[in-house]
Image 1 (cartoon, one colour):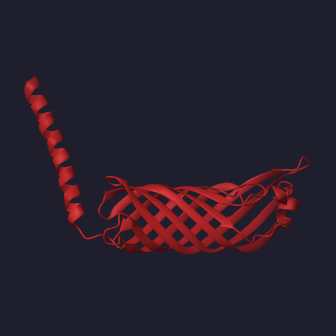
Image 2: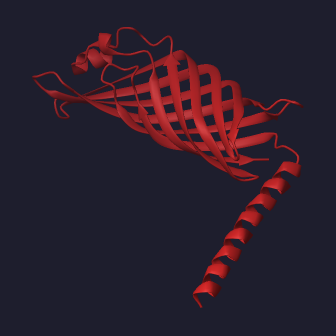
Image 3: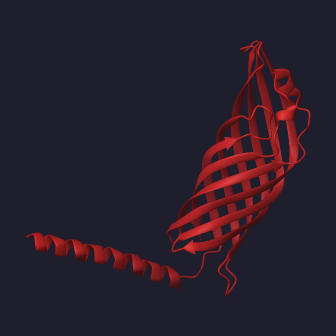
Length: 215
């Protein structure tokens, strides 16, 4: 009985490998996809703001392109929309304030997809566009509330890994560096809340999981 079970296990393993190899060969014979639609969700860090707020980050990417004949790389022109709902606390020593930032980014640019091995790919995005920031601060435990709005030109760089589960579907991980180049140097809202504008960095960072449809 033990020998029969071992033989069955070997046969099942061979069948699984054979099915996987057959699927790989079938995928290789299919025409390449030239449209993509992607959603991603994860954690965002507002490093471009004095209080370095954190929170939910989401995005949608649409693209069109393909692989030039004889090239291993795929090139896609992409349009990207991203949202982040961030919150940070400021403790001035006298009172504690909470600052909320709603960040909306839009940008257009290029995605390059490079094969690594099998179904695993490396992706790199470069986009330019704009960002809009709606900010509010709750001061003194809710005693006072102020708001402000700011906008800027945006340069964004994205990097990640993508695994092709199916001819039409893949999952991945992604990091984006979003650089708002024209936000006000003096952040009056942050200063009133007790933060120092000089503590603001150059970029916001997002770490997200992605799901992509290929057509």
